[in-house]
Amino acid sequence: MSPTQETAGPSAPALAFPAGFVWGTATASYQIEGAVAEDGRTPSIWDVFSHTPGRVAGGDTGDVADDHYHRYREDVAIMRELGVGSYRFSVAWPRITPQVGPSALGPVNEAGVDFYSRLVDELLAAGITPAATLYHWDLPQALEDAGGWTDRATAERFAEYAEVVASRLGDRIGTFITLNEPWCSAYLGYASGVHAPGRTEPASALAAVHHLNLAHGLATAAVRRAAPQARVALTLNLAWVRPASGSEADAAAARRVDGLQNRVFLDPTTRGSYPADVLEDTASVTDWSFVQDGDLELVHQPVDALGLNYYSPTLVRAWDGTSPRDESDGHGDGAASAWPACEDVEFPRQPGPYTDMGWSIDPRGLHQLLVRLARELPEVDLYVTENGAACPDVVSEDGAVHDDDRIAYLQQHLAAVHQAIEDGARVRGYYLWSLLDNFEWAYGYSKRFGIVHVDYATQRRTVKDSGRWYAGVVARGGLDASQP
Ligand code: IFM
Image 1 (tube, helix red, strand yellow):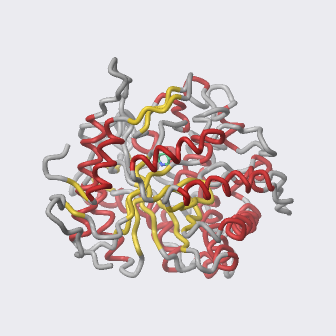
Image 2 (cartoon, rainbow, N blue to C red):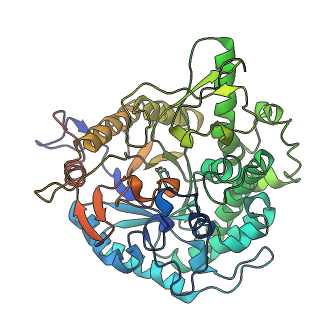
Image 3 (cartoon, rainbow, N blue to C red):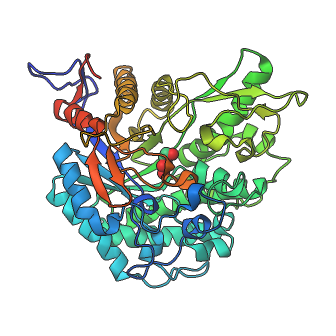
């Protein structure tokens, strides 16, 4: 497929995407499934975290969520109605091997496997291509009790779990994504503590970074053994980091943040080394002795594709320690404490407009990151595995959800993807976050990202205007100049 080969025809859209471009939607297990105690599932770190008072807005939990575990057929039918070509979902590890511990994976829970098997069959019957993420943050709590991602045994057990999923479902799933956004797992989970498991230990966060990278490498090899025909990918939430000024100090701050968010994952997984400046920058926090001989060869496994999740840019400024530190940017959950060894960096409020998360809307970042990836990894297929907006949606009296703000966001960001393709980036697909309104982690149900509205009291699904709009984009294979 050539990036310049376009959908032809009299009704071709103004911004036509390449033939074969994958139009998808995405979700994650804990955010939508519910049924947390059914069919043998054991608690994950997010069950424990969300049930801990004060951790999640409104005391919300994923106990019921969208009840997708029981309503997956209805959700697949909605995707079919919208014409979605692919569905990215995640597999909940505590459903597959609920008795896992640090020294053994434990038996496979057939009921857990069966749920995903039925989901995959339903998708295939609807003509929708499944893409499965193996880890979207629901670590079995038993592993956290033994150290979680600070312990290399978690990476080893993860690879065994990945092999189980690939051997059971790899006959029908063509793409496995090892990890979703390891930045969040490591830094929000172990440094700022705003995500499960809620620890505030910068050194542990960096150990988690390495063990997540190791988990990715080991799992990639495991999936290749179990399902040699499957494609393996890694999804990162890379940051488009901008210095607040042209000063040397701000440029240095931007380099540090780029190192900790982007290169500390990209370099070991795609080049087999950690960036020297990151090791130096973080020397006061850790000596990186958790990196054992031979680890980097294990981490460095060629991937078939790289997934990019993008929502908002990151603005940084050097902090001289005299004035009050500015941490007013809501991006990355606002917590400068998420960044080990960045005590001299500020995260100022960015220019608007903003989404309902308070995140600045700037599609240039998506274009810039795709072009950067294409330049640095020209041989790797790129996918936008998440992009979307939280908006203050309401169901109108006419029964519809008129979310023009979300449509505008999606239009701008898809135009940025189109521009990146025009500029030579091998972007093969786009997964809109999210199919459904869902449990938005520490924000609970207070934020709505779906193109399908969920009434949590009744579980009634209502396709929003953005869902109908996206269906039109998918049907036409691109954007009309007049949209939105
Ligand atoms: O909801 C999350 C998702 O789980 C991971 N990426 C960002 C989304 C919006 O915050």
